[in-house]
Image 1 (spheres, rainbow, N blue to C red):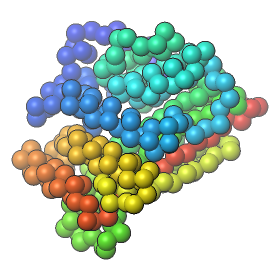
Image 2: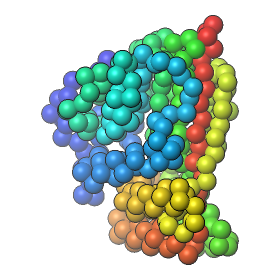
Image 3: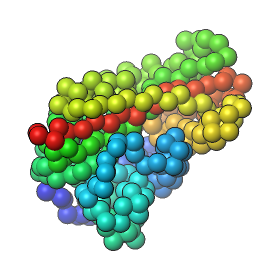
Length: 300
C-alpha cells in the first residue's frame, strides 16, 4: 500500500453530492457515501454477514494468524471483531474514508489508504479479508496480485461478495420489475464507471489466475424477508431485508446520477420502488452470495 496519508482538513471534509458525503481521498470515486446513515447501514451489513457465516468471521482455514489485514474496512466492525477473537494478532484495517471508531482493541489499528494503488507490504500477512468490494475495483487481476504479494507464503485470502441479480421463487420477474431493473442498471452503471458490480461469480477464477491454490468457493442462497420457514433463513432474510431497505439508495445514487445520467428525483423514485419490492414477502425473493478463499503457495 502507499504511504499512509496524513488526515488533513481537506481529506476529513469529504465531498458533498446530492445531500450526501463521500470520501475525498483515493484514486477512484467509490460509489458509497460515508455519512451517518451510510455508517449505520454498514454496521447492519456487518451483522448480516456474520449471520450468513453462522457466527464466523471468515471461512479460510488459517491457523493462529499473527498479522491480519481488512481491505476496505468501512466502519471497522470486522477488524474490531477479529482483533477481539485473536488478541495475539496484529490487525490492520484500511479505507479511503476515515470513519472508524477511536476506541478499539489495543491490537487493532486503522489507516487511510487506497487498495487500488500499489501496495508496499510484501510477505507480511497471514490473512487478508476482502468483503463487499463490488463496484470499487477497476482492475481485479492487479488487486488480487497485490493481495498475493502482501501475504506470507502459506497465507490466506478470504473474499465475500453479494450477487448482483435478484430472483423469485414465486415466478418469473417481468423486465419492468424493480429487481430486474436493478440488475440491468447496476451492471451498466458499474461498467460505465469502469468498476463492475458483478463480481462474485468471477472470484474463484481470478484468485486461481493470480496464483492462489486450494481455492474454495461456497455459494449461499439468501432469502429476503421473513417468508422462509427455516429459522436460520428467516433470521438472515429479515436482516437482509433491513440491510437492503437501508442501503438501496446508498448503493445506486452516485452511480445512477454520475454514470447513467439519471436525475436525482428519478433515483429517489426508483429507490422507493426497490424498498417496496424488498418489503414484499409474497415475492419469495432471494439472491446468491459468494464466499471464496484461497492460499498463497507455501513455497511462493
